[in-house]
Image (cartoon, rainbow, N blue to C red; front, side, top):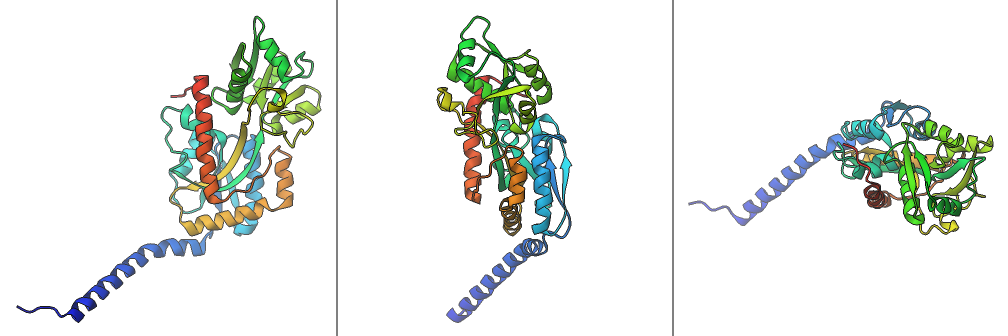
Length: 334
């Protein structure tokens, strides 16, 4: 019987190791090659809501600015429907090559996680966060001629027979859930009146059919300036930069109240790390651009710098926070 010498066994082991390394290298090669050439064609930015919405406006500002550091056009494509589910799911199931990204929102990547019984995507597992695009508090607004002058006035009216009503752009929206939190903080009777979209809700608030609503600054500011609406409070822990003279709801004795709408760029979860790094670097250049900051500020957005691990932690915290409000409201979509 012939036995292998120690040197022979060591040589065989070395050959096996080299073969394993070579095989692994072959598997990594496509990813590195992709990253080295990325982007070699236009990038598609999916907006999961319709044209003219705040998400659409923010996305178009970003798309235009991203083109320069990426060296390629960034094409905006609206894929609205089902509270942002359709467009978000499309990106979750797209090729993870960096050429299809989405502008996620507090709705698509936080509220929907508990609002929908059968959400076709997982906001955490199916996406890789790229960059935080900004946040904005919603504003509590009433008709300009409303007798309600403060948050305390709303609480007082809610305690009377008949209570008070508030509108929203639909069940489970951030405006609906902000109203539910206000109800929990102030008590009394507050009746929710959902609409198919925010413009209709605003019209009825301006007309006095509904007493108040929470909505984005970009949508309500023109009506505040024209004298049709009046802002009573901001839903963030501090005052909104869009209306610094309007106190936050917390300032007015309603307890802890910190709900903001936010926007974040996401890529599919399996996107190679070098491609993600390229996208994140381009996005950081966009956010450092003063002209871009001014355009976003005009939409009521405030910027906040976050590292990749902070983005992931933020997403988990937001899902937990909004889940409690969804349960309290009883809102549920099949």
